[in-house]
Image 1 (spheres, helix red, strand yellow):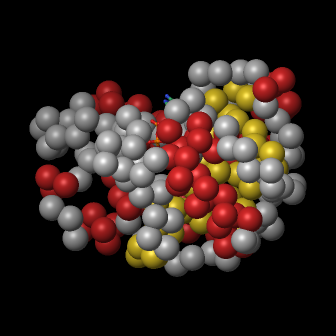
Image 2 (cartoon, rainbow, N blue to C red):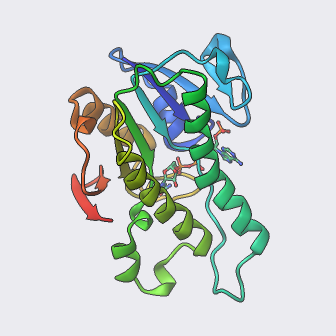
Length: 209
Ligand SMILES: NC(=O)c1ccc[n+]([C@@H]2O[C@H](COP(=O)([O-])OP(=O)(O)OC[C@H]3O[C@@H](n4cnc5c(N)ncnc54)[C@H](OP(=O)(O)O)[C@@H]3O)[C@@H](O)[C@H]2O)c1
């Protein structure tokens, strides 16, 4: 099965891209690398990308948080651009290029902060920042709208759990283990169904939108 995944330089994306799981061939889409001979494609080189059965939109950046007075307006734009506009524009372009004809599963890597319910139940100090929360809840809404178009692929959004990456924290799960869980779910056709919330792959629970 062919998987394409965005954001492969570090963290979960790197773990998936370098996975040795023989069931999958993994192609990377990267903003910082381009090496088609190594199955890495840049956002401006998508014509060369093979068609895929699974597309994982994983690339994202965090923000530095703070109150509405403290937040950085430039960062707000950057986070919305990388975390929301870029993945939506990418799907649009892949459609235009005819790259989604074999797609069966679209998986958006969101967060528990993709959940308005989770945000509502959290205290302000535990939120990662306006930009990150807005970007991830926007992705949730995007998933719900895209589903209404009834494409030949399912649309799901996941929370990978807290990861031991630069964006996460050292107590988080190792991205390689999280990748193994994700790939097992994909291999078992778990995402051929659309879930009515964010799939927390670290607990197998569904977080309400
Ligand atoms: N870490 C956590 O605890 C945690 C928790 C919940 C959800 N998540 C979500 O899980 C996903 C992976 O997180 P992670 O911790 O593995 O992230 P990460 O290590 O920071 O990696 C994110 C990747 O995004 C790409 N990227 C960075 N800046 C970019 C830009 N300006 N434009 C386009 N792409 C850019 C990079 O890959 P390229 O250089 O190859 O483009 C980078 O390797 C993200 O969607 C994140 O929001 C993470």
